[in-house]
Amino acid sequence: MTAAEHLHVASVGPTLEFNTVSLTLGRTTILDAVSFQVAPGSIHALVGPNGGGKSSLIKTLLGQTPHQGQLSLHWPSTPGTIGYVPQALEFDRGLPMTVDDFMAAMCQRRPAFLGLSRHYAEAIGAALERVGMQDKRKRRMGALSGGERQRVLLAQGLIPAPQLLVLDEPMSALDEAGIQVFERLLSDWRQAGITVLWIEHDLEAVGRLADRVTGLNRRVLFDATPKEALTPDRLLTLFSTHPRSPAL
Image (tube, rainbow, N blue to C red; front, side, top):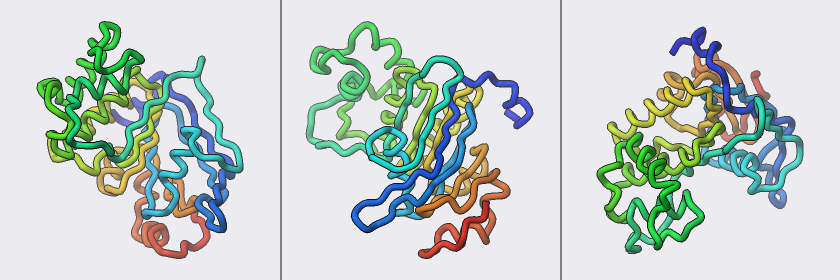
């Protein structure tokens, strides 16, 4: 989809507005007056070094971390659903938990040991089909590869159907087939007008797939199109220990 075509997609996702969002833990500044906006229905990438505050900003958005400043979600009509895909899944691999069990535990109120409820069974099947994991539903989670587990995490982020998706390095464990699945999902989300805030370390993928890129190293160092953002000078500043003044 071209940028011109994207303008004609009716957005179902919200506009996100971060206005001087700050976070301090003890004497350590995690986020320093972070301000930028995520356009509705766009794929917005957040890049920066480890420890630069990306995951903390996501936790702030999800209401898990107190902060100073203002964070606003402007929905096109009534507030919708927020989906979240974490970077990794921490669990005891010895647990006799199948893919279906995990999806049931994440997506329905009914206890997972009672099986899939009829209400969610179709949606869970469709989500697993979209990520290519339909044939692994009876496999134990602990027996899956890292890339397969990441696909299951992507699937749970689709239920219920979100209007805002928050992705924390979803490509980190994916193999080549999984990356193709993820890129197809990104295209689907863009066409559906879903707002996506995407933390990613693969800058080549960001350059190809994002509509806009924010560089964060405790504070915003740039916020621009991928072509304008991912220049050698800006990336050198972003990943240096002591970033220079922002270049917006």
